[in-house]
Length: 295
Image (cartoon, rainbow, N blue to C red; front, side, top):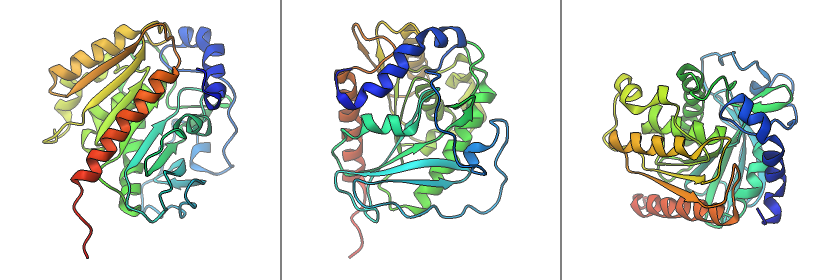
């Protein structure tokens, strides 16, 4: 990746490929800053947040600023793009970090997004000095591990949509383990998002829609899925993404895979530019379909 802001994330990825190959689907294991003591993210990954009323999150910052918040037991970063005001009704774009990543690093890539939107970057669980969504155990991650996290993220998104002025349902993207979570959200909570844009991820076979969708009410409209993947990726092999897209199509999803020749477990400038452009088109479609505000 030649874009200066992308360098920190790329270094993490390149240094960790050997670890990832041993651990299964995921990403880097560089240390991440520990969350504040007592925060939701500081709980062990096996702990489920207690049920109860959801407190409103803190106000978002000024246009272009980044603030921290917590809702439904999930900590996150919030960033307004394109000069959008915090009280403005705009699309929500959710970005899920890789294993061993940090939302602040992922935000550096997304700063290239120029349309008016609200970026939400949730934190996974701290584990051994890094952030993860789940403990990677095999090539086919056990469905309960992924669905538990998908349930947490979906609940947080629903709570945010209820308290933030929003156009349509959230658009979700994520890299590596975050890409796996993006695929999973599109299958386990298809009603919660408008579209999914997984990067270098796959859908674990134990979550293939033929099984996962049989246990939940199927929405009238399934979110379209556009996946992005390096054709030379060995950490999360491209064949897994191809199989995932084929399965989604069989299940009735509109699904597409964009492959990038010579790109390994990384995000090239060309790839990131296309990811942001596709998200932007989807966001424009949400704005066009939104009813006009009451006079």
